[in-house]
Length: 87
Image (tube, rainbow, N blue to C red; front, side):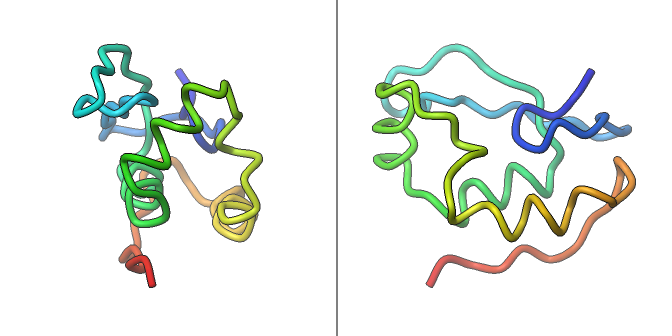
């Protein structure tokens, strides 16, 4: 199984992300690494995530996530580091 955001293999810890936030009626979940999940929510609000999901926009292609995705690409599945907060 691979991470919905970064496409790396998943490790021991798996979290489940609602592409359409649960607060906006989302029911479908996707497996993600904990660090990827925290980065998604530190980068985007639920309103932004809902808008992207409704538009069918591939979130991994967003310019805001490109530095993170390049950085995480070579890390092992269970890698963890503190997540920077949204400015």
